[in-house]
Length: 64
Picture 1 (cartoon, rainbow, N blue to C red):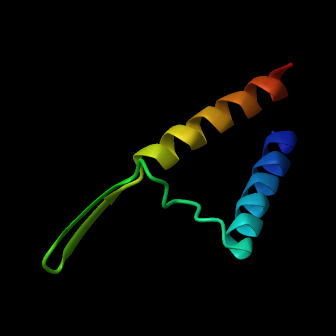
Picture 2: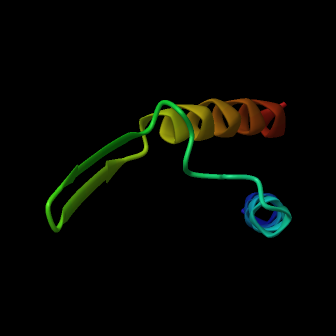
């Protein structure tokens, strides 16, 4: 459990560094945005898929 918390913290810190450097985390080309009048719907499809792949690889490496 301790390793998982440390790795989770490092991942969050890494994402924070990317945001500070100006990398558009969360606004990828596959994300869906619908704007109509004063209503905006945002569904991060591509971001979710990439996050899922990265977390799957990371957890597979930690289990070994």
